Image 1: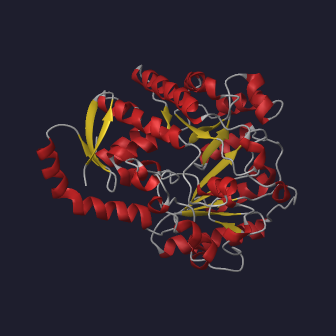
Image 2: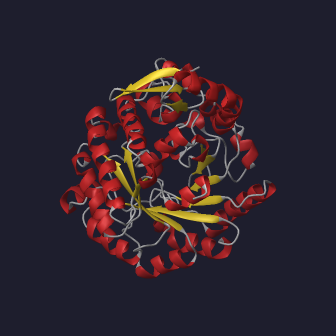
Image 3: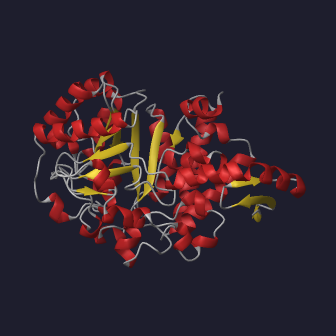
Length: 421
């Protein structure tokens, strides 16, 4: 039912079950709401509970050439030193293709980390062999990327995410490793204007004040999409790096408004995390990122495969044996996604979390991240450490809508696809 939300003295009516909202005459809003309520409930139920794997995150190696202090992977995993052979990667790929084709879709494989380019030869060979059957992506720290690699990535239309934490070389290299900054700047030149590029910034105490500057820095280098993710506390080493949520919200909002102003000047730059939250308000079913949905996409829309073939609902759960779904080499994708470990995550919803269950934003933020909360609190059924961050950012999303800046937040491709403009 419709409840009242007040932001900057503007009164909204919102239904937290469907994310229907509006301002103006209450009777008219109620009439409109009841005319579409059934359809909206069905849409939200499908969004939240549809179990259909569309993506596999594959770690082709345990190895990494960096030692980021907030890495979400346990040390015992990284120290194994396992590289997937081409035959092992090929087995994973063919199993994925068979699964996706049985559902009539062209699915996706993202090579993730540790650092996937530590197994460059095998993953590039797989991409060469199967780029017509699958969408591919690579998430990399960029330190091993060569110019010929960038050309191959563009030729095969591979999506690539490159990590960069600060526009300041000293700050960035303190977090990412000596020489990382200069190497990534070189990579950004090779990939300039490439639509498949995004830059990933992990927000910590050390760079939170620099987020707006980071947006300007990336815009100058013609990067059109960035992700700014709060550091997750799944490993003890990262806990001391987590910013104070409300202070981080202020810095994140400055970055959002900077991106909007730069976009208005003629060249678009999108902060994907914010765009996804805004879509959660105006078009929930159009969301791409699955962290801010309850239950999240882990095990339900995607899962992670480690270098030894062990499967977890998502990368943040790697090493938590109670959530394993079996081996990709010994089990079908259907068996893995229906495993007890995966079902534990898929059954976690905001309705069972105190405070979240009565929150107006419960189906906009989704109380992420269950792996982080399980690590810090021993239970997935606690509200997020970042609750106040999400609340402040979602309130700002309503302000952005009110002031007419929605179209400066989303990527043009999303606008064309979802809104027919």
